[in-house]
Image 1 (tube, rainbow, N blue to C red):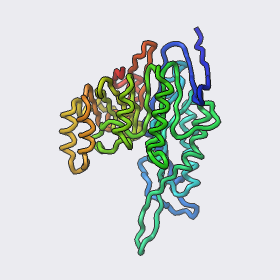
Image 2 (image 1 turned 45 degrees about the vertical axis):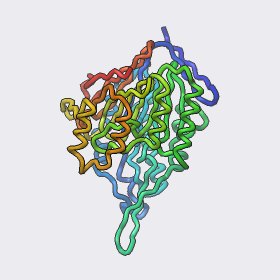
Image 3 (image 1 turned 180 degrees about the vertical axis):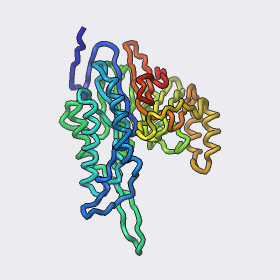
Image 4 (image 1 turned 180 degrees about the horizontal axis):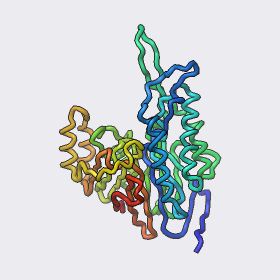
Length: 365
């Protein structure tokens, strides 16, 4: 039987319907980069940039994307990138604009027949400038939300068949709700919180709710456990009012999986990272922690590198941790394939090499 896809507009939101099981490709942070984006018009390198990311995009990242593209078929309606699609820190506003557009067009070449969607990451709106103060060169961060809005969001809107979108947007697909949440909303997080409340209220019967955020909602990193989504207590409370919420996040560069009980409902979080230079190393999966106690023990061992963990611990201690798996950064880089079935169950196949076989399979629901 041929698939039948319907594109509908309901209260300004896209609704895509398809019969049968379907799959979703997930990419974590990819940090698209090239030296040309950091070179000012006069030829000077105006920003401190990562040569490792430039080298990564010359070598390993294209192979990672090609391998992920080989998995795609007619059951994949779209590819979701979880923020930090670019390295950012461009030398000028025009170069950041070009970097954002080029990143999308580069990824799109690997997925020409599938919709490519992305959520805002901190590097996607970050630019740096070098200034001389009393004879000393200093680097200062500039936050370029408007460039992201003007250059990148129209590309995502076109993928969704819309004239325009905001940095917070959502759509329904086959009874599942996809919410793309702006962690860095301007002028304040309340903008995104209000969007989240309104979207959930408008979709009371969603089978699965995929909450897509760059910064995790639940503490899950042995590197920066305290860096959580802004207003995370309120967002957690809002999402915990619904069943079958699956949080999809990036940012940490450290893949992980968590299930926590909040009141009567369970929140599930999956973090994916797609750094090319740590991809296809032939390393066995290394699990750093598979219990809250092991997680806390790992944080204690890294106290100097991970200060100010009290807020993260307090947040996690307010819930019942049902499952937790935190992987080493260098053993689980790659991509994930979500398999969503008619009965609502969801599995995540995690790939970290070119073998075509998943390194592990995680039951999200």
